Length: 515
Image 1 (cartoon, rainbow, N blue to C red):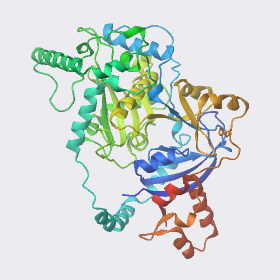
Image 2: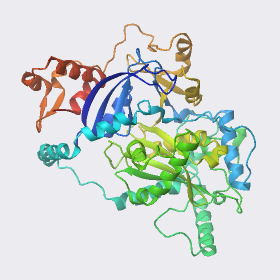
Image 3: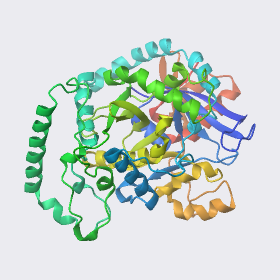
Image 4: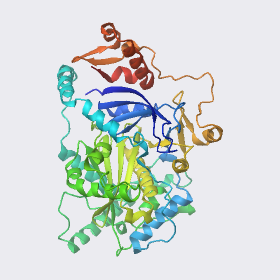
């Protein structure tokens, strides 16, 4: 299925949640009826971002608080001192139930509904109603049927298949250790190479794990219902690794450090597909929503009637991304997911993420305010970085962690620059520039072109708008044909603006719906 989008144009002069300016925010947006993961990857690499099914791009040189796309490079990532503190705090809590004192109210990683269009729920709800999905999808299916037959596409994998896959992921991600961290290609460290040539140890370890697992099963025959959850193995099953030659511990060592047999708490992380909703997602929907509702009311001071089920669904569950499960892709497939943090059998936090061809893209995080002391914003970001590294082992091109937008002019949003090494996207040429090189310019000016080469241009720009694909009156046609049927002068301006913002490649692949 191709991506189908309805361009909504420029929206200027509305309230900004960052600086509180009444009418400083400026962005362009489109409603995505459906979108392939490759198209969305290419769009976020041009400064776009989704909120539910609305995909928008700030007009960087006009908006009051320029929002620069930021990505972290997980393969070279080294946790900072403060990151290690957060991970140790979690381990202490899990092991002994210790609640460390100190001020945790101002969690530096405090996402707001920032990446929604200035919290403009009204706009998105209105668009949702305007865009008549039923007729559109009917027309589209017709247009595509013939093309699908030509390509001989295989049917989509069933839900049961995804179930096993996500169990597989839960097993690796559950509060045990990831599959095999030694395979992680990171900046080479002295002495690490030797680990790779020792498969026999791993087998011995597997045998030990198996024995422990059987022992545990005998101790707990009436365990949780089979199939609903992959039992995250207690971390105590993993013997502590010898710290070779005093090397700094890796992120995985810190996250999956072994806990005592009698640990106070058990934490498990499960990845469930949110769109289309998997059976696990549906089974946990109400519990997840209740966590979101409390989070919005306590942390963001929403009145009780604001965080409705429909708002939650539109923003954090609905996604235009088509689920894809190619054989060389991650076990869970590509698309939109909720990463649920289960503590002692209940959800305490949920990270909303998109898994795309080259990255894990963080959408939002909400958590139970009773657990604010665990700095779950920072903790979940570190888990998502580790998760990206894990996916990279099978899918080598998937090697970035996108954190949304970096807003240098807003102190609350600068925390994203603390996950190093990271890059910001140049708003004019769409190349990635290391954040260290960008910060001096941002100190002088809110809006900056990061590419230092004055000759450089946007290589992916729209060069031939006539080849842009339009979906009009149940037919797909190039813009060159469509424009001959149009009398409205405003129409050309809108289509050319869209072409400039999405770039040539996406304009030829995506279908621009016009009515």
